[in-house]
Image (tube, rainbow, N blue to C red; front, side, top):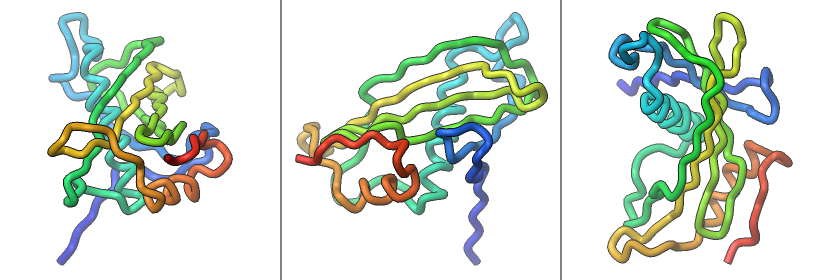
Length: 158
């Protein structure tokens, strides 16, 4: 028996985002001030990105010796989250380069629809044995082009 639980769904509530995942703030995510410690937002973004991939049928590490590695991560904080708050993290692929992909995230407090945090992550596809960048395969690009449509910025493949 195969069981798959997805913690997100397609949405049209906050264009250009077309996908969002929900999470709840755990006590261990909070600091001495009772708010989410700034570094704990990264797992929220990772969850949203993973669920986005799951939704598009892209899961697990690449078996052929290639995988994406983090190149850059930027975050801006606007409002705090507290223990037990429900957070909805919107995620989209913003850009596909020749060897890199860039995701954009917005984390919203569900109860009052307040934007709390925005982030951007750039990942590079590398040959794991050589630790060098490689071109993103056309079939991977196509999955995101079909889902994101005109909102996706595309660089010419090499």
